[in-house]
Image (tube, rainbow, N blue to C red):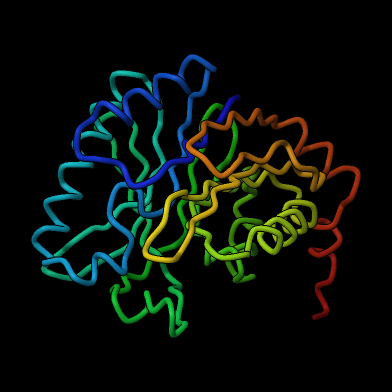
Length: 258
C-alpha cells in the first residue's frame, strides 16, 4: 500500500491548500496521509503567547476540515493537533477516518531550555496509538518519543510492522535522525515513515527532509527542504522477510534469564 507524507509549513484555516495536497496524494493511490508536527496549529513558542480559547477554536476548525477531507477523498489522515480540555493543553496525534476519530496523547515532552514543551503542555497518560489498516499493523508516536526505548518495546509486543512519526526537526539534526531511525528500523524489523515540517520561526529553520526506511534499514527516499509530497510503498511481505532473515526480535525473546 502507499503512504503519503505531506511535507508542508503551517497550514491556513481555509481548506483549499490541504485539499489540493491530499488530492495530489490520492492521485498516487495513497490511502493513508501523514502530516508533520505543528502544521494544523502554530509552533508552540507562538502558542505560548496565544489565549487558550484561540487555540481551542483553531483546533476545532482544523478537526472539522480533517473529517471533511477524509470523507471526500476516502483516506485516513494521521496528524498532530493541540487538544484543549478544561483549559488544559494536550499535544495529540489524531487518526481521522471519516467521522471516526482516535487520539494519542504525547507522553514525553522536550525538557530543554530552548524547547520547554514540558512546561507548556499537560500530560494525559496514554498508550501509543496502534491500528490495523489494509492488513498492516501501524504504530504512531511523536518524533521526540522515538528516542525512548520503551516505545519500541511496546510496538514490538504489539507486532507492529510500520511506525509513523510526525516530527518538527530544526537546526542540524537531520543526519542524527536518519542514523537513529535507520538503526531502529533494521533492529526492530519495521518500516519507519517520518514526516518533518518545513518553514521557520524567528531564526529557527525547519528543514523538512522527510523520509521512509524499510525493515532492512534501507532508505526508501528522502524529500527536500521545500513543500513536497512523498509516496512510500510498504509491504507486509518485506517485514516477514526481514524477521526471517535477521531474527533479532526472535533472539531477544529467547533471553528469558535476564
